[in-house]
Amino acid sequence: MIYAIVDVAGHQMWIEPGKFYDVNYICANPGDIINLNRVLFFSNSNVFHVGMPCLDKVTVKAKILKHFKGRKLTIFKIKPKKNSRFKKGHRQKLTRFLVQDIVC
Image (cartoon, rainbow, N blue to C red):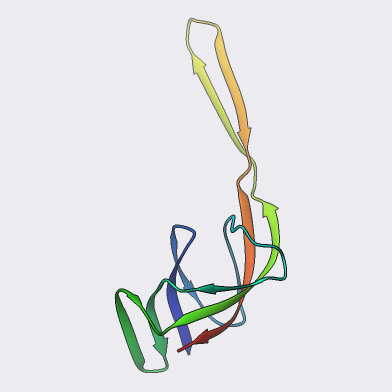
């Protein structure tokens, strides 16, 4: 089983080839191929490589599938006895990418 732990958009993720993942917005167009260079850990069957902090020779090739918005979060603040209410919503911009290959 081949997998890697990479740092993508401020989050550390366990990724495998052939699967797709959702992360914070990456500034690239759908269909673009991106290289993820911040590989922290790489495993190929029983061979493990640990970076300090990153592995230099391992890169992950991924294809941007689409951009979308996450689920809606509602923020509601209230100050008692002041008749002050504040309601606000937020939807995070996300990017979905497909891991094509982990190149060692």
